[in-house]
Length: 128
Image 1 (cartoon, rainbow, N blue to C red):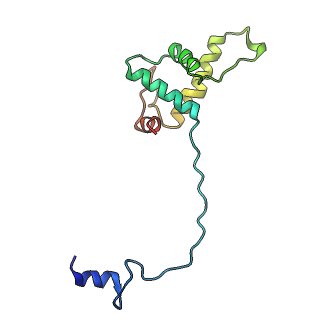
Image 2: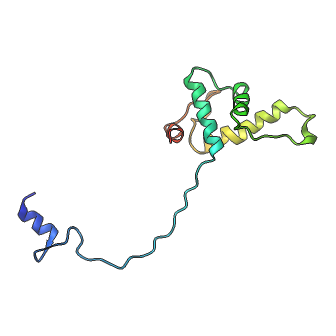
Image 3: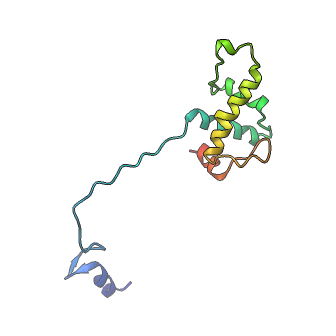
């Protein structure tokens, strides 16, 4: 850009003004609230992905014990439910509170396979 062009675009009567010719008083901008993802579920997704990366399919039978070991499992059956099928209850809890959440967040692919892969969004989430 030549000096003459710069003066034409960025100067007003020989005074440098940049791209601003006129200003207005500041206005308040409406606040935007961004919700952070649930930390436990995000850490559980990291665990899920690390299993896949290591060549271990993160089946339910592997994920629930791993989540418990990492302190990411929150399900505690009520005393009156202890006589019922705990494995079935844990399976439903896992799918409702982890897999369904990951799917709603767009972090895993549609469930066409038993252990869906992470999406680009899911990988970005665990890398933060």
